[in-house]
Amino acid sequence: MTARLPPWVWIVLAASLSLLPFIQKPLFVDDHAIFEQAQALRHNPMVPYRMEQGTLGWQKGEDVGEDNPPVFFYLLTFAIALFGSEPFTARLLIIPIQIFGILAFYAIARRYVQHAVWATIVLIVTPHLWVTSNSLLVDSVLGHVMWLALFAWIRAWETQGMRWGLTAGVLLGCAPLIKYTGFLIWPVSALWTFSQHTKWKSKTWLWLVIPTVLFGAWLLYTHHLYGADHFSATAESRMTRFHWANFQTVLTFVLWTTPVLSLAILARLTSVFSDKRRIAPSFWTKQNTLLATWIALGILGLSIALGWTCARFLVIITAPLILWSVRIIETYRPSWLKNISVYSGTASIFILWGLLFVHADYTRAQVEQDAGRWANAWIQNHGWKGPAYFSSATRGGLSAYLDVRIWRPASPRESIAPGSLVLIPHKGLPPYFLPAITHGTVMDRKEFQTWNPIRLLDTHAQAGWYGSIWGKKVVALSSAPLEIYFLVRTDP
Image 1 (cartoon, helix red, strand yellow):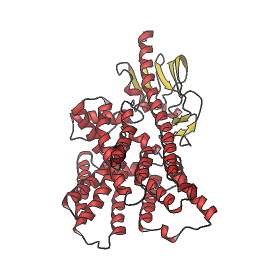
Image 2 (cartoon, one colour):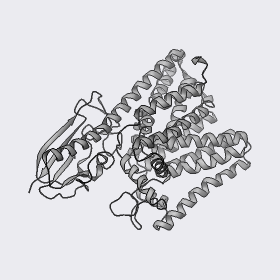
Image 3 (cartoon, rainbow, N blue to C red):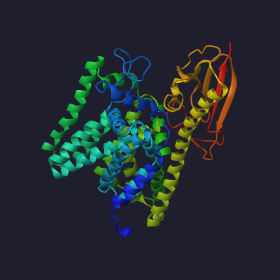
Image 4 (cartoon, rainbow, N blue to C red):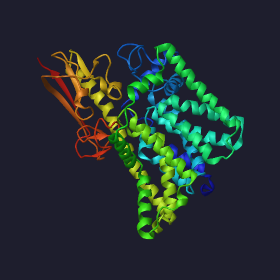
């Protein structure tokens, strides 16, 4: 009976198993900041960014504080209004979007590769996508909406129907309004059309009016509220010139977090040395050229955005990376890759590899929650009556679990008055994010251990998964404590 289940059922089951066990993941990195903004939108839904001093938003005449457009924030606001303010309920609302996105990828994969189910399983467990999907970051749905938009666009051309055209237009409009890097799906959709259709004169192009109007309305509305449109203001403050070092960093992230690409490279090299074959001209088909262009445009864009890289940024090119890698494997697979059991074996390896990353991320997030509870309990047990501070740069995780009646955020390098208590992470933040303490006494410390040697956020081990400004490595291996928190009393 189970053998007769259609492939999409197995894909839904696999996607659910990769997401549902982690819905209780503590808030981490920027999760808390995003969730706070969504909660604020409930009280003033017509103002997408808070204008109060000291909040993550955007004040008129000032630099942009929040880089992302508002669609994802409104989605979380909707979840909070329906189910309450517990983060896991928001994740439950996000999961159906992610599953539909994965099914859209599978539908696209069927048009590009022979082993579409295998490619989809590999996509689900690819570390940068899997870890990001289990967060409340805007990137957690960005890739999925992009795949939905592309699939709807493909179906609009295949059917020439109004339903698919309308759906494609709306989704193409939503992608860059989740995050501006979602713009990438616009040229990709156009390139797909040029690569697949000889008759380009079609009314289907008219559906592009929808995303154009949606984005134009967003620009006009933010210009009305803030005196400048959000897209231009964000680009001005966040874009940088192309630097070869940034490009190399992005490539490093790609290789570390997309294991199937390494298998594809190995398969190609094996075929070169065993079969003495060069790249066949037939490899550079329209399909392969489209995938390679998608990857190249994404890497180039990430190389000039912000000047630094996070693993989560790669979700905009996850799909072409997987499909291009699988097509290389299918085109040049050596004899050792022709056995179907090898595909099952490599899928198992990819799952285990991805699980190590997901566990490392979940455990690191748990540390933030446990540290907050420990610090609150210490204050209560020791009867501390003086002021207590934590670094405001930890707003994404730790601050969600600190008692706001006791703990105050301190800006980077802010001077703290003598007689204050300061909670300091030993590995989670570079020194320039911490408040300035000239003299102090360590009142207590708390170590957190794990069996998993993978480190995603560790300034001492140089692990920069959540930002290359945190470390030169994508991940690091270490047997040292996962984190150490210090409670320091400032002295005169």
